[in-house]
Amino acid sequence: MSIDVNSRAAQPIAPVSRAAAKKRSPMATLGRTLQYAALVTVVLTAIVPMYWIVVNAIRPDSEIAAYPPTIFPKELTFKHFIDLFEVYGFQQYLTNSLIVSSIATVVALVFGIMAAYAMSRFEFKGVRAVGELSLLAYLLPPILVLVPITQILFGNGLGDNRAALAVLYVATLLPFALWILRSYFSGLGIDTEEAAMIDGCTRFGAFIRVVLPQTLPGIASTAIFTFNAAWSEYLFASTLMTSNEKLPANPAVFLLMGHMGTESWGLLMAAALTIILPVMILFFMAQKWLVAGLTEGAVKG
Figure 1: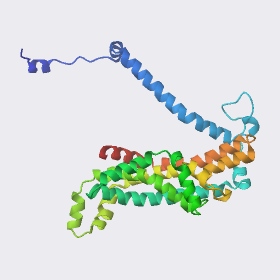
Figure 2: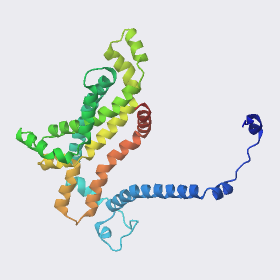
Figure 3: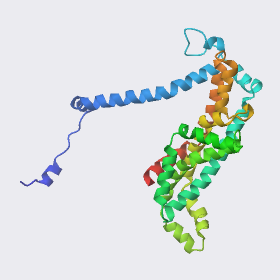
């Protein structure tokens, strides 16, 4: 049986109204409704706890403890933030977090960039095994290695040491940086790199002048996620740091709970907001690079 393509192509396509489309596809309407419901649920799940932290950080403890609770604050106060910094010196804990997280991020990025470039450009025996082992190390739950790491560090006099904590963060975050950056370098063509070397650049010069500028979105997104992971870490910091003055911000919140108990939820909420705020600002400032980095990494990976 033959099909007359020309006659079929000549037939005009009748427009379908939106109402008719809905009548013909009830399952599509149900699916769209479920998608919106799921989206609203996810958004509320993310926003409601954040809203509750902000509201309780800026209203008095008497209003926080009142029953029934109110959604909107009746009175605003910044007393919790003033007490947090002037009475409890929370800026010291934030400084500790900033130092450890920054060192861990920079070192993990430097080693991650060099290792990812080498794994994507050079063929050597065992490169695949190295990549899979690093991924396995990243997927290993930290609680499983907490006891041996604690024994090793305290046994060698490295307990309660911020440099040792930063090195430990590098060891845990380097596999993540390696796998993200490796996909970027593997997705880059080597033509421009080889052309630069033909024009007189060394391999290191071609790497600095040609390769790195093309991977800046990926490096930026990797740096932000690495910094966020180090900034938010709690398990190793609370176990290895025994001096109160060397504690990062997350374990210091637990220290505040020990001092104040449940008498000042506003103080605890102010501390939580102070910890969250720098990371949120960083994400908003680098939002453009994050989107570009993630999408390019997904395509190139």
